[in-house]
Image (spheres, protein in one colour):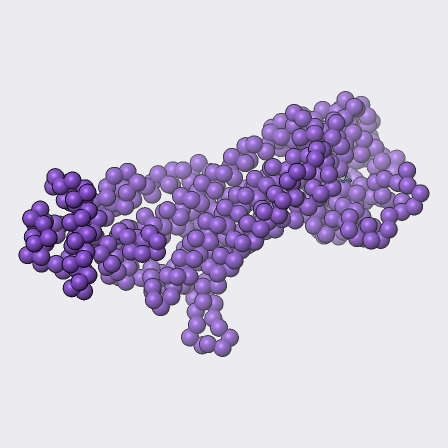
Length: 462
Ligand code: ARG
């Protein structure tokens, strides 16, 4: 059992089949810099507890620095016989500084508290990266909202024409959802940053007088875990960030679906920028929204990662179980996926060209101003129940004649209801309609400008 972390009680080495199953270096090697940082901090704790001489501690720091340099330049690689990143780095450290000093580092720690800590460190770093990328997308949406402030589009419910809205209002709806994801990531960070599990040992804590708070501070945490069993066995911090990644994927997929739909000949609401769309190998005319389609597809993968992870965690008894090794690949994949998806998606959103003339032409169609008639009548003193009936009768009359509401004559309006005086035409334009929705959160241009300022203030908190 040369080079293994255990062996004393075993007569023979592990079978190759077991080694093949057990090995995790192909995915946990990316944690090597974090493992080394943890070892630096742990060496300090051992030194502070009087378990290393000053020279020994220095030698360990030197050896760890040497390994870190070789991790960075890529010359350090795990071997097939290494089970995981922790074992590989201990073997390499002993090669570097010798077994006498190198063999002292493992005292008072377990791979269980190591992995629970390093994984948090890795996720804390990538939380920052993903937050910044989501904020870029929020800013791209806000930029488009600002650039297209006058444009009016058909707002839909059930995918049917409902009421006219400002394009900016619609774009900002996506921005708010994504901003909440950024806020979720910040909430997650606030929970994780105070919870360094180093010092939890395998499950019960350590008996060597080490100071977990010292290690926590060294690694950038604000505190250490209060319960060593919880510290080593909980993975809700993994599930939670996987959830936020999945939610980002879902939110992005809703924008993606619109881009795909809006770029069709039938909608013709947007034109994709050449640099952010693709062609066909056979059909020369094609211009495809591949970025949006990949975004829509990857949302499934992000949800799958979360689902798989939660399924692994369900009903696991305390404390550490090897099942927990399955926690890393899904969330690494979720973060990797967003880190490659978001820059492309943001570029596509930022460069979309909106066909605002087409949107404006369609905005009043499909009787989308019927609610405006009803609400005008209410302002004139008609009870809403009656107003709804009257506006409905206008729709029936217009539909029967194959025209839109604004095309009804004064006589037609008057014959539907004497309350329908020609003044009703004030609200029968899309501009009048959106301007009238001027309560907080509404689509009136003044409110949308105010909303944009509010959004940007919330963005600047991150
Ligand atoms: N590689 C393991 C993981 O990712 C950590 C090692 C714990 N192994 C053990 N036998 N206690 O969870």
